Length: 303
Image (cartoon, rainbow, N blue to C red):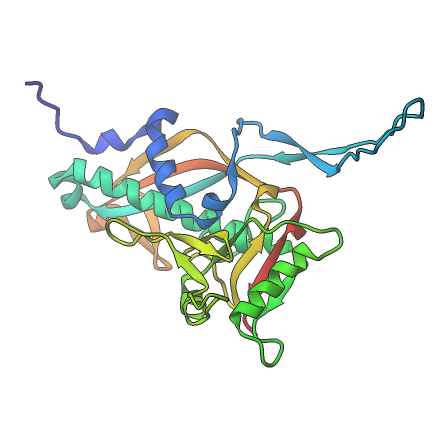
C-alpha cells in the first residue's frame, strides 16, 4: 500500500491549478445567493464581451405578392472584466503542524465562505468584502431604480408587497421578467408568517437530507428563491428580478502563499505573526460580474 507523505506548511505555497481550485470555487458558489441565481460564463484573463439583445425582431403576416415585413434586431455588447479577490486566514503554527491535512480542508471551507460573502456584498450592495468601501464592479444590483418598500400601503401584507414588487417588472414599461428572488435569512419569518392563496407559507422550502445549509433554496410564487444571511443590508431584505440579465465568472485557479513573519491586521490591530507563533495563508482569485440591465431587478426593503 502506498504511503502518502505528510503535508508541510510549504505545501500551501504556489498556484492551485484550475482543476484543483474547482472545489473551492464550487464550495463558494454553494454559499452565494448571487452565484446560485446568476448564470456562470467563461471568463478570460483580459475579460469577456457578451452580446445582449436591446430590441427584439418582430414578425408579421405577408399576403401573396406583397412586400415582406422587415424588422431590425438591436444587439449590444456588455464587457465583464476580472477583479482580484484576496482572503487571508490566520491560525496557530501548532494547529497546522499537528494536522496539516485537516487544516487544508478547513482552509478550503474558510476561503469559500470568504469569497462567497465578498461576492454577494459586491453584487447586491456594491460594497467591499468587509462591508466597507465599494465593489470593483462597474454596475451592481444596488444601482436599480426600482424599490418596493414593505408595508408602505396600509392594509397590505407581505404577500401583497411581493406581488407589487413583481408588478414593477411584469407591468412596467417596458415589461420585464421575474425569474427568481434572493432574500436575507432575517426575512424568513415574514415569509413563513404570510400565507399564499392556498393557505401555505409564502416560502416553500426545498427538502434537505442532512444539515440545513447556509444557502437555503425553495420557491416563492413559483419562482426559484434563495435565502442567505449575506443578501440583506440595512433596510434591504431582498431582490426580485430577471437573473438572466446578469452573469459572473472566474479566471483560472487560485494563488496561495504562506507567511510566519509578516504583520497582519486582525480586528483592526496590527499583529506580528512571528511574535505570536501564527501562520497566515493568503489566497487570491479573480472574479468577474456584469449586469446588462440594472432595472431588470427590484430591491425589496423595509420602511
